[in-house]
Image (cartoon, rainbow, N blue to C red; front, side, top):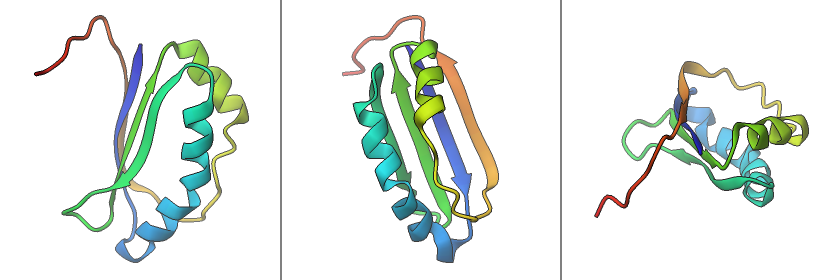
Length: 95
């Protein structure tokens, strides 16, 4: 399993526009083969911060998705991009 997680920062006054532009992408990704979950969400404390979270069965599923994802070209500058892919060796329920 692979998890891609982190955040980007955009100008505060464009955050909602950025999120709205990615709504369709999130819906389509969640239906993609091998996708376990995807979310692009606002930070509740820092106005310009947006979280990216993806969980995929395989790296191959991610690569296939990227060929058809067609992320929107919002023209919004992303600053402080801190997103990392993690290969998960094992998992267990936290509670």
